[in-house]
Image 1 (cartoon, rainbow, N blue to C red):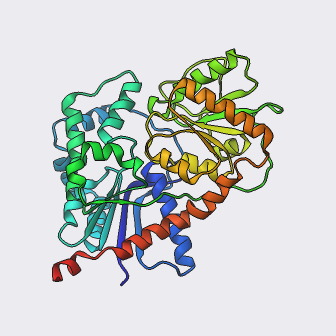
Image 2: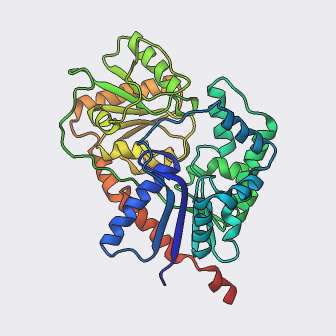
Image 3: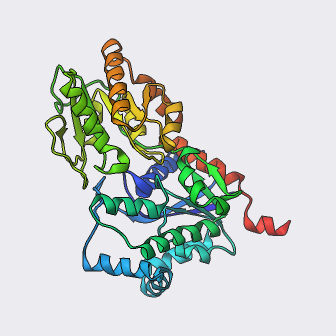
Amino acid sequence: MTKHVLVITPSVRPGGGPAGYVYNHMVGYEELRRAGKNKNEFVFFGKTGCSDRSPGKISDSFVSNIKKTIVALGLKHTVMDLIALFSRKKRQMKSEIKKADIVIFQGPYNTNLARYAKQRSIIIYMPHSPTIAADEYRDLIRDSGKEIGPRYYENLKKEEKDIINIADTVVFPSIGAGKEYERNFSMQLIGKVVYLKSGLHTKVSSSDDKTDIFEKGKVNILFAGRYVSHRGYDIFCDAARLLSEAGFNALFYCAGTGPLKIDTPHVQNLGWRNDIFDVIRSADIIAVPNRIAYYDLFPLECAACGKPMVMAGVGGNADQIKDLPDVIPCQPTVESLATAIRQAVEVHRTSDSWGEQNRHAYEEIFTAERLAQRWDEYVSSVPLKLQQQAR
C-alpha cells in the first residue's frame, strides 16, 4: 500500500541542519521516483530558494525580542494558532497534515501543528541538534557573550518534550546522535526510537584537479564550520599553535564564521565560503574536533570528496568513524588533536590514495538516494493508525 508522507521543515536548501537534511532527502527521493523505485509518496513542505549555506545569526532586533518574550511566557502555541488563522501558508500546511498518513517534523519547528494530525496520522519527530534544542540555543547565545533566562530555557525544553510525547516515533541517525536526548527525555523516548543513517547529494567530481586556495608544496589542515565551542574551533586553533611553535611542517586554515573567531598567526582564516566543496577538495586533511556532535553532514561531504579526516569520537560522529575507513580518531582536547594531526600528516606523506576509501563508503552508504531509500523502506514497515485501530 502506497503511503502519503508529509515532511515539514522551515526551509529546504543545501547545507546543514533540518533544511539541508530535507534538501538531501528530497533530491534522493526524486532520484528514486525517476527510477521507479519508490514505494511511497513523499511531499516536502518548506520554503525553497533560500541562500545556500548562509551562516546562522542571532538577532537582537525588536521582532526577535518579541519572539523570546512569547516563548518565555509559554504562549508560543497560542500565538502560532492565531497566526494560523490568518496565514495562507499555515492553513495550507494544516490541510496537508490532515491528508497525510505519516507526518515527519524535521527539527523543533511548526510542531504545534502535530495535534491536527494525531487522530489519523503517524507522527515522526527528528531532532537535529548535538544536544537537546534548548541546550543548543543556550550554548550558542553563551558563545555570543549573552545568557537566556531560566524561564525561557524551561519553556524551550518543555516545547520539545511535548512533541516527543505526541510523536509515535523519534528518529536519530545513530545511537550516538541520540545520547543527549536519551539522557534528558529517557521516559518519553521509551519504545519510540528508530535509527536511520543520513546521506547527502553532491556534484563533487572525482577529478584530482585542485584550485589555488592553499599554498602549494605544504601539507594543509582545514577546519570548516561555525566558530563556536561545540564545534571545537578553539581546540583546533590551540592545536595549530602548539604544533606550529614546535616547528611542525604543515599549514593550518579555517573556513567559516562565528562569535568565537580567534585572531592567530598560526591559522589563516578564509572566512565564510560559498565554494566550500572546492575548499574541501583542495585541502589535504580535514579536522573535525567537536566537543559534542549530532551526526554532522560535513564529514560526509568530506568523504564524498575523498578526503581523510582527523575526527573527535563523540556523539554521532563516533558512529561515522566506524563507516569511514580513512579517519584517525581523537579526543576533543588540544593534545589529542595535535597527536592525531601528526599521525595524519605522516600517513598523507606516504599514501597518495589516503581518503579514497571514504569516497567509496560515501557512494555505498551515504548518497542522497541511499538516504531516501532508507526512509522509504522504513515508512513501508510502519502500520497506519487506521490499520492499528482495526485490530
